[in-house]
Amino acid sequence: MKITRVHATWCRVPIPYERQHTSDFGRVPTFDSVIVRVDTDTGLTGWGEAKAGVGSAAACAGLAAIINLDYAPLLVGQDPRDISRLWDVMYNTPREGYAIGKGHALPQLGRRGLSISAIAGVDVALWDILGKSLDAPVWRLIGGKRAGRMPAYASGGWADAANIGPQLQSYCDKAGFRAVKMRVGVMDGSPAGSAARVRAAREHLGPDIKLMADAHGTWTVAEARAFCRMVEDCDLFWFEEPVNADDKRGLAEVRACSTVPISTGESEFTRHDFREIAELRGADVLQPDLAIAGGITEGMRIGAIASAYNLRLAPHLWSGAPAFAAGLHLAVSQTSGFILEYSLGHNPMLHDLIEESFPVVDGHVEIPDRPGLGITVRQSFLDEYGVRA
Image (cartoon, rainbow, N blue to C red):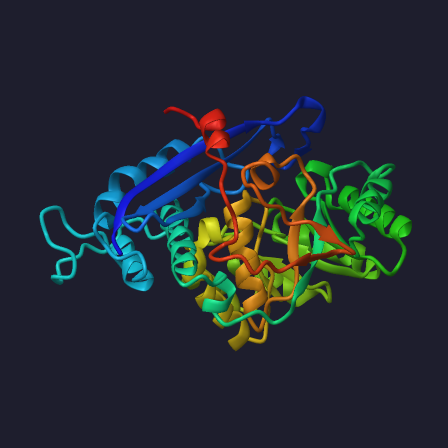
């Protein structure tokens, strides 16, 4: 089997004004991601997803260009089933004019950012091909499934203090969610403002619903510590991204000062970032986004770190269908995997991009047995929303 074509499409889907929300990223008018297609000479096609960053749209054109202009020429003619080797081929870009595998690779100068996200998108597509070639779901190839379904938490929560409780309760009522996540951070003006919204949410939901809070890395260490003190009696299931992802020692300071569990990872790249977090004891829950961090291959390595350091794994799944499916397969196969994120924002990239669906029933997502990622991408969706940069 040989790769015949690799192509990335930047998709930009407008969000209706009435469905737009305002958070630390400002008002979000579109949902953007890069969908990767890998074709083979056997007729099998694999689908992946790459993201320039959470909430990022401007860099999608560059991300697609890296895949189409830099990585595609390296991959055409290669066996798509040699996933680990091809990951290294992309990570260690060969010098122009030198043959792959001859020992003349130039170490990648950009070991984070768009180059890793581009690898992620291709990697997910290669796993999709491998699963289809063996008529097996990806989870079976990376360890098997630990359960027939997994609990999910509803991810949203932008309302003010007067309305945050009813908003989160509506998520629970909609599909039986028993866990919900709300946004906090500089959008509230102060830690006290965020704490007031969390307290209102807890009072409305009662003690039996798991409640998470996500600050998107917008606070200083002092602000994050103050917030933790204010909400310690609110029984938060976790406090996500309290400080900037570059301040890993600050992250560890926040975790050390409070009993509130800390989660992080959506802005991290490769196992090396997660190893540092684990070594610093900076988090209780690791949250790699497989469309950013390096794909399923790197996700398994991150899962091993979580297991080795007695941490938990909850992939970041604010994404389109390929990355959601990849995270689902990873979470259900890993010893440390325990819960799935489910976007309650306006997300056609999850619900309309593919023929299939991932319904939530009684707060759980069924694990599909379909080959590969278990998705069928609609070409008509790519044609309608693909950006011709």
